[in-house]
Each structure stands twice: as C-alpha cells, then as structure tokens.
Length: 304
Ligand code: BEZ
Ligand code: FE
Image (cartoon, rainbow, N blue to C red):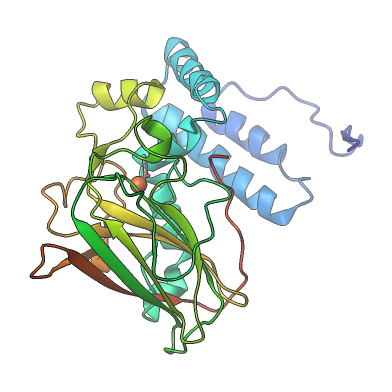
C-alpha cells in the first residue's frame, strides 16, 4: 500500500510558534488530527489524545516515567509470539477487555442477551470439530465428570440451527493443554455445530481455577500492584451464527473456591452458575446462550 503524507496548504499552516503551555500544545496536537479521513479513526484519535494528555498532566508524568512506560510496552510486544499473547493479557488485567465486551453487548444486555466475557489468550485456531455428545477430555484426563448441554437461541427464543460453538477449558489441574506437556494436543477443546433445535452437548471434566501467566511484564505489573492472580474455574464459549453478533463468553463454576477472585474481571452477572451434582458423583451444566441479531464476525485467534 502506498502511503501518502500531506503537506499543509499555505492557508492552514501554523505561522506562529505554539505557546509553551499544555493547553496550547493539546490544541495543536488535536488540530493535527483534523484531516484524518476515516471518521471513526478521527474520533478515536481525538479522544485518545485528549485523555492521554489529561492523564500525563494529572499525574505530572516525568520523562523517566515515560521511558519506563514505553519500555513496558516494548516488552509486552517482545513477550508476544505464536505461543503467547502478552498484549491480550495486558488488556485483560486492566479490565479493558471486559469493558469493551460490555460496550459491544450494550443492546443485547438490555434485551436479555447472554453476558459476554473476554476471549483471553488461550483460544486456538482449528480446534477439533466434534459431533454433539462427544468426549472432549482424553481418557487419561483426571477429574470429576461433567456433561454440558446447551441451546443457542435468538433474543426472542428462536433456536439457532447450524451455529458454530467453540469451547475450551483448563484441566482439573488448572492448565490449558498448550501449557501442559502431560495433556494431549487439543485436549479439552472442540468445535460443535448446533442441531435443528439449536442444541449442542459434550462430555468433559470439571475444570479448576488457575493463575494467569505471570512470567512476563504483566506478571511484573501484577506483583507491583500486589494483586491476586487467580481466575475462577470456567468454560469458554464462542458462538458464531449467520445474521447474529458473535458471542464470546465464559460460564463460571459458582461453587469454585475462587468464584469471586477474577484477576481479569470476567466473572460478571449470571455467568456464575452452579454445576448440578448427580448421585454418581458427576456434574451437569445446562446452558442457554442468547445472541443479538447483527453481523457475525470471527474474532482474531490468539494461538495457532
Ligand atoms: C483465560 O480465560 O483463558 C484467560 C484470560 C485472561 C488471562 C489468562 C487466561
Ligand atoms: Fe480461561
């Protein structure tokens, strides 16, 4: 793509120095954004610049602190690769991913749609396609048995047939298979298609809560903030259906000892649910996932 830069016409050119005040500087910086041709980019940059300048002024940011912040961002990039997405982890621990999910789902939430939850850094591309009723845990996976059955519905209760349902979860040891050499490749991951009544189902094991990865710059920040690093036990879902907005969510085990300790603020509202205990020691989870009409979009997948 050829990038073209514009030089200002004589009329628009600044002919006097910018007065040496934060306010005048901000005016000049905002003026430099005025010709941005994409209106949404112009709006976003305008707000970002205003808030960034206000933030630096509010905390009296020093140049040494700016250097530290830039170094942190560089290290976030360096810690990101095909095996690990430190950038997503950063958005998650700042609460930004949860906020953006709530903003995106504003309309759905007002009309009984399922609450969203962040995707996180562990969704993998090409999860195995499995038939409804399949076992997603390999035979050697320990833990309490769990049977999950769900329905994908529109806001007015219409079953959505042929929807794609992606699911992934940590093991009872609290690790995703990509973090754990003891587990088979793609263990506890699957892609299902809903039947004519919008149903999907699978056999699994009860997941455990876990600590988020703390071996990178996000871990340093969490330590400096003296934060709890746990997530409650949960199963992830992404539901894709033609004519409906994609739903990314998680269902949390309300009886997990970590139920109210979520370092990424994802365990909101009715997403905390009790898994039903059966007399044989196994558990069941019944779900309804309600989608808002709109455009389906496949989210970017953090892991190959
Ligand atoms: C997850 O739910 O898989 C997750 C989310 C944020 C950070 C780490 C993991
Ligand atoms: Fe998770």
